[in-house]
Length: 233
Length: 233
DNA sequence: CGCTGTGTTGAATGCCGTCAACGTCGGTGG
DNA sequence: CCACCGACGTTGACGGCATTCAACACAGCG
Image 1 (cartoon, rainbow over the protein chains, first blue to last red):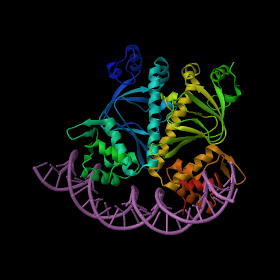
Image 2: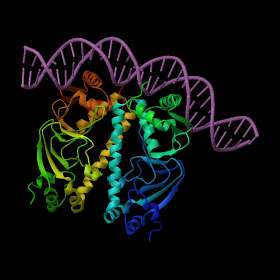
Image 3: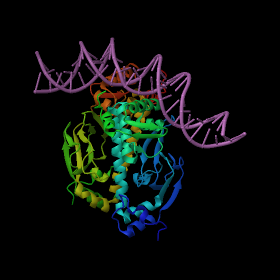
Image 4: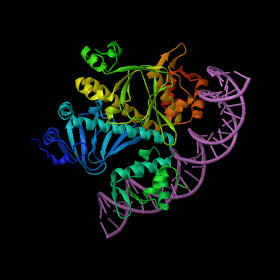
């Protein structure tokens, strides 16, 4: 018997519809752990020993260059796999994972991967689809950076964040974890100064409301026009 | 018996060491085809019906935006899998693949994938590793575009091309397929004008020699310094 | 021999990064 | 409670890099 309950994962997109035994197979080698805000789940270039599933919270995946520049590769949302180096045939983690808020995480030792993959093919399929989807997203980001101006890229990034991690409030849709201007800059390949200027001007136009580590989109439609560069100035 | 000979793939990195029967399993559902220069192997957004292995030639993978901008996602080299949408759980091709020179390609119908994957796990593993490696490369490209200037990005791109597809000549190492300034611009997110200017100035400094659809690196070491922004001006 | 694709180069514009200074919030410790 | 301090945010001024616009050169091909 696994020490964890099926209900932890039974409702997740990748696991819905699996028989109870399969869920138990999956959970038996798993452990759960809590990561307080700003703690590292794993570290760039460290030997990959485990892979993970985010049960609750938000995680920031960050790559640091030899020169010390940081780039945010993505945010992980609840229910997503991450740190699946083993599924890519890698032995080290290509980035660091930092808890953006207090998080609860399931982890499996890499040694459990081959057995899991053969006994529960749906699990492997989920992992590979995750990687495939991330390749797509990353390609899209390259295209954005190649073809769009900073304002459009920032608008797209903010829209992506609210659509993936938005929480409805009385004023609009708010990104439901703390995020700084610097964070947004590291997602879009620009500087915190430019992000600050643009958020300020959007606020003047009534498109967003933003405060300390907080962004709320009040007019998603217009922001979408900004992202597509279709807004009359 | 497959209609194709084992020797076609026996020497490739992903297949070396596989027993002959496995190679036959792999080759039985495969077909080979020739694609003349500038022809499309598959088309962006088309329904994915097959996946491919490049036996000889060079293939350019291109994504086009709704606005009509083109970005070169990557070049495929001999021996690499491509168009493996099926392994990512996709039903359409996310980009187009165009023969940069006359090419010979193996193709499998997607319907052969599940059987192949279970009967020859090493084949599946190769595909997944390919996807993983491309995710890494694409991430690196995002980081380059976020943190480096155009000159460094172009230098990196040229170095990558010569290292992956270089042919030694009396003058240096030449990219062994036709490539235009426009192509390099679409790889690096810049304009053909900027690429032309930089190649000209590098030629003045004796780092490269370039002509019509041709680039030869004569001083890889200095070009590497340029890529790292370590060159004294 | 003209046409199309490719490449080169000059000049001007402008986006956005850089530098700088200041403001504000929230936590911490005396 | 209040003073302090570090993290976060804002805004102005300036300048440089790369795009944009333009014109021309050259090669290959029908």
